[in-house]
Each structure stands twice: as structure tokens, then as C-alpha cells.
Length: 545
Image (cartoon, rainbow, N blue to C red; front, side):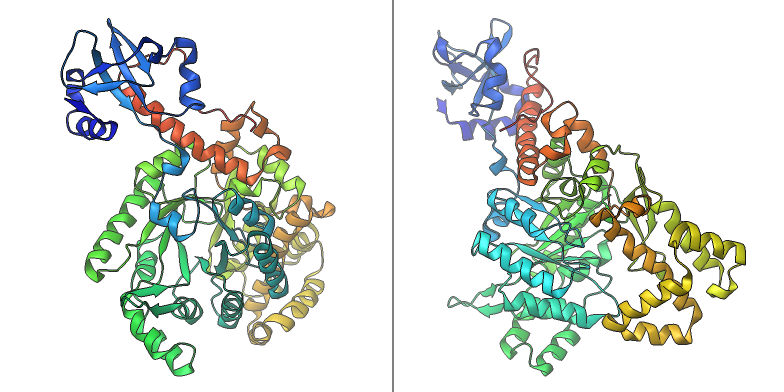
């Protein structure tokens, strides 16, 4: 009896220990010489058989397998399928976003995830997300037009960074995305769901001629807590839906359809990432969210199952493969993209990131949620920002106002950190919030502690801009969002052409990570057969293309 490759793979899953009961028949030229083993695994990717040739395991790239022994057959110890990068991850994710790869470049605020980065990733068959947080609406609009001009109607995402207390800003961005037909929104830093994000989701709902629900506007939500994942995996809050209906933003049909779809199509489980993070371990968090998804899918019976992706800490082929093997539908990278030439940051930042080790990161107070004690993960090597930011938070927690800070402490604050007097900073703060959010100034007039917070947030907010703009006299105050994945990436590419930051192109990096993951998948299967890896690299080394 002869069996096909797929039938053989199924039999191996059921009775791996009985592999010796299968026999291979083929021609001598189908047996691979020792010196060619590496080539067939990295260049000529095709199914391979592991043959027991007189007690020695060898590879064959052709022939047939049978359960019946013949005079010219040899025991078959295993079969290594042809696995390409395109085979990894969820097919529905790739179909939904019209990608070849189950790979996404996650958004980094302040335009660090630039239009150029989104364009490059899209052209490489991945999904890109523009980092709109902290960017003016005019610049966001120009970036959207640049992206659409370059890639046509291919899908891409724009990040919606949650802004507690500033719902008008969120709504303005959503209106802009709807105006230009942006069909994917990456939601991040949400503590609760806002009307704006629900509006985006529901305004794209309609009924197909077959009676199914059509979803035009996709949401990819980054979360690191089960309770937040639940919000995105449930249907929209009926109260918000009713408000949107009453305001005329959605139709009666869309309000009814809202009951049958989750808020998000995709949930990115964000582990130990740069920027906002809870430092959760992926190996614990991802299975928990997948299990939560399964329970909610059973409860609601959605037409399309929510996909669960993995982000945070993914910067090597090993990490990518681990995520896929754990059930991730797609992977998301972040810190490593900031070190690529397309990122919207300075060359100095790229050089610092290229030198970072895994231990060169630390948590520091966040600018956008400073008063709440929220922290972000940043690079500590080559900058004093983490120490300065922590000092500001300690002062905020200790004193009720600027006037309550002892004179010597205030002098240190103004000379070493702010490098301006508090009054000079306050002048800048009034101009900024007078234009964007006057209510903050009204609150500060009544609450001196809030005024102190706004002055301290001036430093925290400016510091990321100093990094992006490479402001010479502020090099030691640069805030650079970064996770330990950056150090892992640098260790992986050491002594390769990607060690130099000027060689790091975002599409090239993405391709090496997924190609490497596919390679390691085959290597792991080969190792399980007992094959000696004498002539085969057990790690994937990136080579110039």
C-alpha cells in the first residue's frame, strides 16, 4: 500500500513511535549527500524523508513511502514537510487583510511607525499600522493619503491610542479614518471602550444578500489583561449603541447587527513590550486569552471566530515559532521596527537601539497617564530619562504643589531636569493646552497639584520628541520606548549584515523572522527523528537577499 505525504503526516501524528514500520522506495540520486543537507533545508524547500540506510539516517528529497517492505525499500524514520513562511499562522487573518504573511508591524506613537514603514510592510506581504498617537490630525491625514497613493486599495491599519478624558480627539480620528475608507484600526492603551471606537466598528456593518453580517471596519485590539480582552470580545455595550443610534451616527440596522459581532476581529496579546506594558509573560498570557476566546465564542456563537495574535517580545525566529506553536494566529513586532531605517525616529536612536542588550530596559512614568502611576518600558542605556522621570513622579507623590517643594529640591529640578524655570515651563504648558485642551488649564487654576503634574508632564511629553528629532542638547533626556526583545534581536543578528543599523529594513527583518521560524520548524521535526545535525545549522542566520 502506498501513502501520500499528507496521509503519512497524519499517520505520524497518531503513531510516531511506529515510524520504522514504514518503508521508503526511491532512486539513489534522490538521497542527499552530506554536503548538500544545508542547501535542501534553506534554499530548495521541499518535502524530505529521513531514511535508515544500514543504520545511518540520511535524507531523501523524493520517492514513495509504503507500509509494505520490498527488496529495494529502506526503513523510513520520518518525513519533514515543506514549510514556508507563508504557511505559518492563520489563513483567515491573511485573507482578511490581504497579506501573504501572518505578520503585523505594530504601531508606535509619534509617527515612529511611519507611512514609509507601513508601505514597506504592505509591499512585503505583511500588515502595517501607522503610529498616529501624538501626531497632529493634519499630519495623520497626509500620511494616510501617502500610504493609499503608494499601495492602492491594499488594507493597512491606523492606531487609535486611547485618550481618557479627551473623547473628541478619538472621535476626530475615527471620522478621518471613515472619510478615507481606512478599513483597519489598531486599538491600544484602552482601559474601557469609548463611543468613538464603537462608532468606527458599527458604521461598517451591513447585511449581505445571503443574510450574513458583513464587517467592513476591522479592529485589532492590543491587550495584556483578560478583563480588557473580554470587553473587546463581547458585543458592543448596548448603552453606547443606543447613544450612537440616537445621535444619528449609526442606522437601526447597524444597531441590530451590533448584537451579533464582537467589538474586535483580532486580539493581540501584548506581553513584555516596549512602551505601555504590564510585563506579562507570553507563555502564560497567550494560552489564557485563547481559552477566554473559546469560552466567549461558545457563549455568543459568532459568525467569525475572533483571532488571537501575539506581540511583545517577538524579535527572533525562535520567538515567532514559539508564538505560532502556542496557537497565535499572527505575530506582531514593535521595538525592532523602531531600529529600522523606515522608522520615524533619529539615526542616533537607531544606533542606541542597535547596541541594546536585554537588560538595558527599565520601567519609567508615562506622560499620558502620569498621575495614575502608569509606567512605560524604555531604554535606559545612553539616556538619563528613566531616572529623571522617576524623580518627577516622586516629587509629585510627595508634595501638594510646586510651592511645597523645598527650595534646594526645586533648584535641582529646574537646573538638572527641566533646564528651565517652572514658570517658563508653565508658559509653554499654557500655550499647548490652551490650543488642545483648555479644561486642563481650568483644572490647574483650581488645583495646584494638577498644575505641578502638567509641568512635569511637559518634560515627559517633550522627551520622546527630543529622541525623534535628535535634539543635541537633550541627548541625555531622550525617551526611547523599548522592550527586551530589542536585545534578543541584537544577539541574534550579531556578526551578520543586520548588525549594522543602516542595513535594517523593516520588510527584510520581517522576512528573516518568518523565514527563520519556518526553517526552525523543520529543524525541530528533523531533530525528533534522531537525525545527526552534523552538517546542518540549528539556528537561522540571516543572509543578504
